[in-house]
Length: 189
Ligand code: VGL
Ligand code: ZN
Image (cartoon, rainbow, N blue to C red; front, side, top):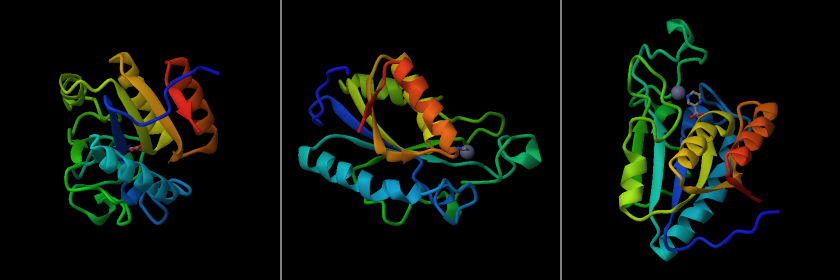
């Protein structure tokens, strides 16, 4: 087992990926028990607040007729359409006012699964001296996976908060964890 500092400290940031209604039970692209990540992430958010550490929350924010939707040749049902209820953060997610919202998936012609894809977030964090990212959210095998892999490419240390993420497919979760670990991310139990 690799050794690492397990406390949330200076130089760390919390990244909450796509905890939106459409990815929770009852949503258009529901992840089984997707809402179970909310109380876990709320504890991390409270800890970030206590220690004055930065909190980022991404949202999938598609235009109507987005290329990732089945009707347009993609693989997903329509989800997280801009300004709809499904695109809103889960109502129990306790984001502080100072949380920074990262909006992605707005291009008509591309999907942007990673929170870093064309958002400028990596450079922004680097400029602030952030070295390590604690990450959780939905879905583990799609946007969390893509974001973690990108973060590793950008040389951030990455801690995936295992209880704070759920996959679209159980088998996909196992595979995703394997890929994230191979890329050097730590899975924090
Ligand atoms: C996501 C499927 C399609 C995600 C986004 O946030 O994991 N999954 N769009
Ligand atoms: Zn999407």
